[in-house]
Image (cartoon, rainbow, N blue to C red; front, side, top):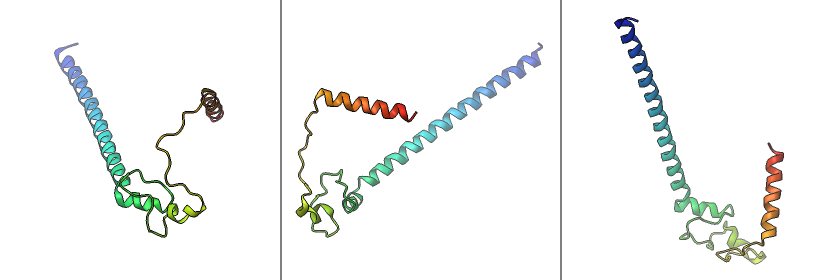
Length: 116
């Protein structure tokens, strides 16, 4: 292979490396853009107006500053309190027994295996 052939081969290799690096850079930029969009979406979902609106659908707010009991007639927590809806729940659930956890894991494994 002559000098010209070696130069051409070097140019092809360098061009391929540049192309691959460009693809990697574009892929990383897309990932950052997706991450930024996801963070903006979460910020929107956690905003006070959205948390207050979620109350009308029966969701408990993720923001502890948003009260569950309000004077709003569309708030199901207030409207249905007389029917036994509990607004004040303990902050921690009881720890289940080991047999309960084993049974849950067994059932989960069966469902996952059946859906494969």
